[in-house]
Image (cartoon, rainbow, N blue to C red):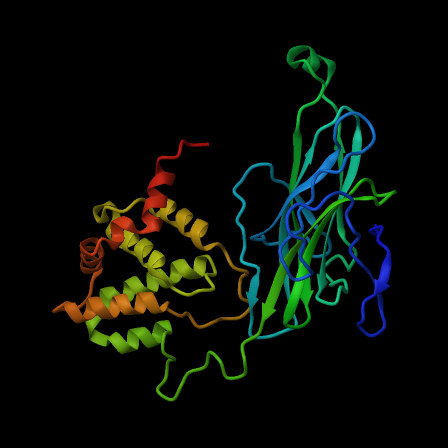
Length: 361
């Protein structure tokens, strides 16, 4: 099913590709270009009583493994959890194929039956449609809103209240042919037949390939800042348990595909795993949730990549190793963090304690 958009010159090899339709309605806030933030629109009134549907939100999120290679998967998602994902994709090679998921929400108020259609597609910085497992045409899903029955009106005094439609769609095997800027576009149209746009949100995605020679071992073996390099530098001062803790922290970073490397948050989770409740830290589940909430999730890497340790954590490990007569272990790290006030004031720990007090859903 094709989106009802006027063609324009794409500037790529003389091809004519559909351009994003100008949404009808009033833009809220600053309008930006193709590579910028999402364009938010006010609801667009349609004929009849009350307001019709409008696109209220779109969000890149972590994609589950697709069940079907050749078609989009739409899942009901009025609740959570929804895991926002970092729009930056770091890879050593292109072209590359990977699934991309988008969470979309449509609001509605009105006293009439309304049919609409949600469309999601990917395009490159020139506006050309990007191929995915189902071709290049947008993934579509019909939406139908109906007023509440007469019994509802008798109980609440009106036949309609604000409602919301929410889905998460996964496009399998999105083909990213080169490094550069892309956009995942979510568009709401009045119906498949009319194609009249009611709202559009553009979500930027950027693909970056490292410069030639980057992220490679130097003359002396492991590059500085890498997990292997930090372990090699600290040597016996880190000790067997210290090395095990650092590996546990790296495992926590890899679980979220953390693009920034192994940081203090991941080390705190490793300390909780090693010492248990005796550490005085919140539970591992709450710490992981707080870490994901703070740092987000990244697109998974298609190839093995070297794990790096953040400069702040490297400085902390050096300081602890210099001040400790023997080898660094879990108890020494907890004592050092607690003595400096870093542990009690760490945002991760505070947020994890809030999550632990959260009522169960």
